[in-house]
Length: 178
Image (cartoon, rainbow, N blue to C red; front, side, top):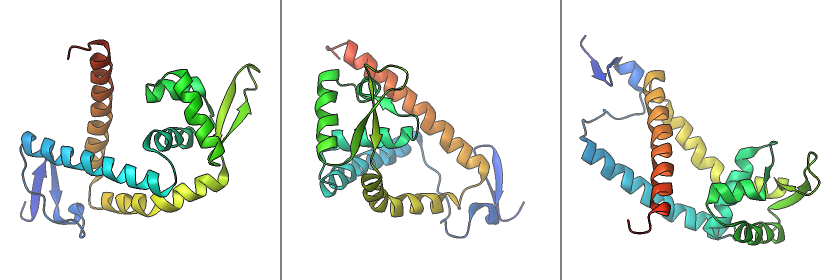
């Protein structure tokens, strides 16, 4: 069909590509991995700058991100330690810093009074949202140039790659000789 392209097994017409997206150029897996490496490096630098702007270090900001992501299903310090791959002692220090900085509060666990759950404070949530919100709005707009099938492929790739990365990190941690 004139004016269409085929990608990932799906034929797209020019309208499905979205007016705001430039034409897609073919890329090899090596070129794509290079682009991914650049994205990861840029994200790491951005995370450091965002953390600094918020008065946090990267580990504390990452922890706060997990707290925000949990929403109303509050996490325990042990849950957070597992996600950040730190000891419970190190997690206590992170939670203490976040609490002193006004980002989180400890809440009693209704099911087990020996445990506490970590809750984001509204003012801190607003600070982080005001900083990250415009970026996430731009990312969301960028999806407008992709078809639902393409977004599904992106989601699949990110999900599978996240698992691959987690599995590989576990392997590296268990094999100090790597």
